[in-house]
Length: 491
Length: 95
Image 1 (cartoon, rainbow over the protein chains, first blue to last red):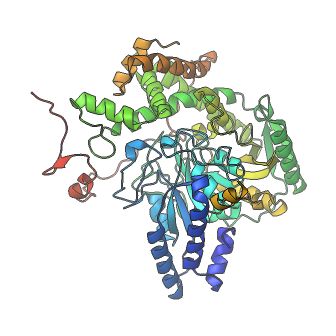
Image 2 (spheres, rainbow over the protein chains, first blue to last red):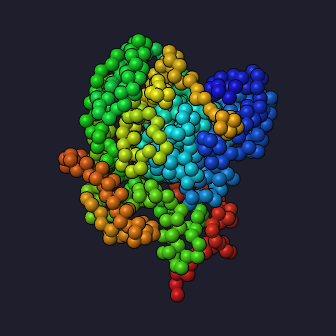
Image 3 (cartoon, one colour):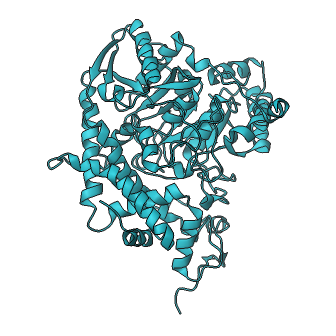
């Protein structure tokens, strides 16, 4: 039962085939068996999850038909959850019990979802491998010597290993799509402003966006229905007519115009991944789509602009961690400055400190025009590249990542790690929606295909992804997990 | 742009981060590597391009100036490392 999609579980719960308590128990048992190895969860909420499940079963008995009633979810550990530890993967928040719920958490709760726990992540969402987590790296369920991707690596690993039915994540430069690709699941980064950022611990506020990680495109549509919507508490959330993202899932792809960016099929792309993506595109052509090559000339500058804008915004956002109001404070500070400096230096990890340094430098007197302003100009050029492309095509398709999941501890320097997000980062600069769907395997590791649509055209993405999943079974493949007991027997 | 050890110390101070003498050299090197990636931006002329601060060029929405939050001081101060009588405690600032 635990391997089923949200859509299937909803039916099983509605028909009485299973109760939410039984289902929640099954996930908790599986977490107990496999989390030591996968390290997907930082916090497991056994007692409150079973209590929420019991209430969901009661509500169902009383006639409730909430969309996610009784379905177990995992939240990335940067969504504030009232009364529950919320660390953002950092030591500086090792003791932070959030006094309130994020809007996304509130909406999931209101829809009837049962919270299993909080998932592992790169510290403050800064990373592409999960290795910058203070709580140790999460592992890839397909091969535990490989990274699950990041920053939402714990969520992706948990969904792929059936340690939950669905999960939330956030994406600032690829942090939903890249781990979804590495773990063989479906993950969507909606348009900027589609989902409220209230209660999401901020990394780079003009780029951060929440989204679901799940087992199918249909599930992504169901979750987006719950998560999307304007929120008075987030002034950047955008007011749009309410939309049912499942409504157009079954539309035909006849006449769909697909663009393949030549820059995303160039040097640096793994040959196996290229072959898988070209095969996937051929599947879509067989469904009636047409394909043409397109040009995104400023692609390679996107990563440079991103590493000004994101660190600059991060250096401002992370100034709130001062050891005064919450979080870690150093021992025996001699004065205020010593308290700030040592609390922050002892509380933040190396990558976070590096990005704060880069951001502070870019914003410091005399450098603003050369860095921050220049990066914002390139941001416009990147956005214009996509706008021009969407005059000719309906969706843009390519690989989500240049290579499959890499080995733990195999990438030592920041710049090499940054280049892992080369195909995903431009979307955050442009605010565009993108989805990663499983599209094959290379050496036993999943391949992700990224589909991009124009502003607020998530329904189109989900339609294309769902039609693809109707004729392929990549998204249904499951990793074979070992647990501590079976490993001991083998040894 | 290449960062010196002194630059690294100055930026660390601006960001209220403590770095030791030995760390400063390593941090300067690593930040310089990142700046080399960033500096590729300078290869393109953006003289007549308007900067984009927000993906949809949106401007800040304003709300009516009315109180919407209730007082949660006592709840929120339970999170503080040190507080007393409704105040946050920090090391002595004024001699």
